[in-house]
Length: 173
Image (tube, rainbow, N blue to C red):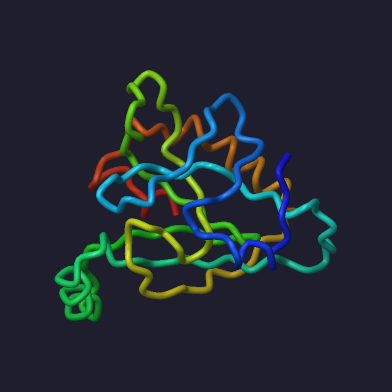
């Protein structure tokens, strides 16, 4: 089990994120080449769950402009006020951002790719441009219980079932 404190994560590059505890999957690291859209897997364990159960953990919806294009960013600026645009989203809880995508990492076969759920540092997706965070309330589950819940969803959100209109990151969040 790899561990780091929150203060340590601020010193890390978002693409060199530690991995631990991902059952039955290969350890992977996302390429820093933005042309290579590969999921980043790995939960950064922050050294235990000494969380006081009386304090609920805030949950945020992190919204990104889809991709890194200035054109998409401009269009979303105009279209967002009327409720449309090209966006990516992720849920942030316990200092980790979780999302869903359907692309294969280079060198993997379809049969080796299982879940489309992936994680990264909050507001640091390398494939999209962060736009805003929306508070969604709080969760009273512990960090370990929350991660267990996400792991239990991995079979229900396989990479192979990703559909841009019917089963995407927005549906997952």
